[in-house]
Image (cartoon, rainbow, N blue to C red):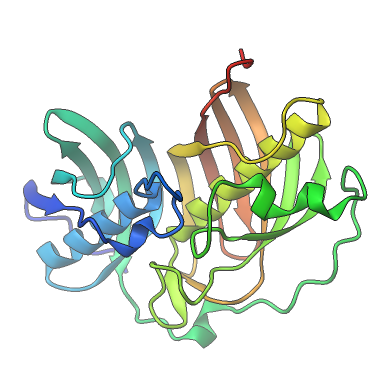
Amino acid sequence: MILPVLPGPVSVPLRIEDDAPWFAGHFPGAPILPGIAHLALVEREVGRVLGEPVRIAAVLSLRLRVPLGPGDALALRLVPAEGGAVRFEIARGVERASQGTVAVTADPGTPLAEARVPSPLPAATAAIAGDDSSSTDPAALLPHAPPARLVESVREHRPDALTVRARIPPGSPFAEGSVVPGLVALELAAQAAATLEALERAARGEPGGARRGYLVGARDARWAPVHLPVDAPLEVRVALEARALPLSHYRFEVAGYASGTVATFLQLGDGDR
């Protein structure tokens, strides 16, 4: 059920606390607010305005412009759009930190059984570059630390495409008992994309390992149901659509749950062009 549109534009002051759990593991030594936390703030505040819990069911467009950190004072503006959608903008002072359009629906209070918990995934047998398991260890390929790191293993790596096994840990700051909001699918996609980038950099003989990157956009991203399960295996696939470093665009799918397109920004090294 799509909710009625907002009664009109709304402005909400926000502050990101220094010890906000969203920063845990993202990133060690230099905490950055995850891009999906911007959407979590929107989801929460739309629900407050409408007087009932809501879930973001789709991200029609999203642009993340400025990384946010502990203690940042923000202003959130919400504007009604057609079909029950909501346009939003988050600003830090005069800087526009993020903006986008999302579709919202009433929170069904989905129990875990309705979140369609997948069966355990079989062991990977597909082509993976190299036999050294350390070369595909997500801990060495991603700058995230637990509980922010969601990728568990590489299942299939082909040119410009990757399938990973992921899991949302019970200690995730987005966990609500046995589920998380569907918007976490975007973080799954971003981490799979970062893993692909690190593997292909190593395959080209360039310096490998983890490199800081950011989710900076999404479009036509949808999920159903509106929750993802906690502590269950998830298969995440990404395929490169376009790249002009430091920007890359990937098509993604969280098997059985979500699909769409994400954009990432890679922090380049001294030798990169």
